[in-house]
Image (tube, rainbow, N blue to C red):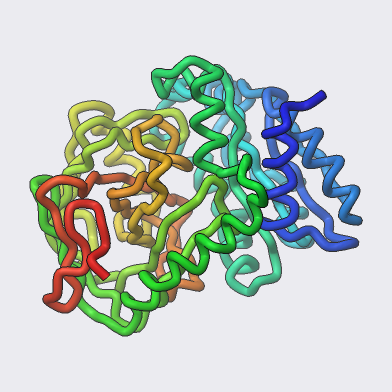
Length: 367
């Protein structure tokens, strides 16, 4: 019998996150390590009248492609995924890696080539998602690799993960609906303003949110969740930020990342490790060196860095910015095959000002 938490988690995803309706075609993306959650999702999608389609890979596939594939093979667009993203009603991706560093030494140009191949699929997801024509969700399931990366035992990590998703509440769906209500006040308070300034030992930034929409994330596209975010005006970001946590992208870890912006664009990028990789990724396309998302993490149950962005970007008391593609529903006009979130802690001697007023200080909103 499956872990009760897995059953509850699948129920939360099917009923709340993607709200499966009779007739919905659902692409289930995972690896063989995600078998337990995959089977629960498959069963529950059937129970809700949906049509689950299996897209199960081996954890080593990406590494093999990037190290052995010819350029034309790496640049080949996945026809099966393209068809599903263009036509299906829903997609659930369950990250379930066996080695989080598997592609860490892959040539940066190969990583960029694969990103360009995946770009049309991402654009379809963004557009159909913004049009509310495609219910997409990205989540994960605990694996030994994730636990090891987080510096936890496997059982400890599972406890941490399911606590962050609140699957053992009396009614997890009601819990996340309440999070929607709680976070709405922050999104509403930030709406209609212009200038945002971030100040602290690791950041000195300004950006504009004029005319942009603030979105409260409460488990509809990510789970676990808990953040408010928007897309800053593309040419408005100025200043610098030193990210306090390692910035990870597809298995490559960049430590000590520091970016300097002028009129929205990254004009200087340096890091202690994998600096060349970071600089190459920022050159993937024109939009890769501009910011597509600015967000504030609000999940206090994610109280430590784990090394997996889906969790870490929600850390209560942090902010993150994504270089690359923005979400159209936020008003962002930035397009790219890249969407790379980088996180900075704000819990000490830091503040956010909005149109000159202190809205947020040392990891907490003041409203």
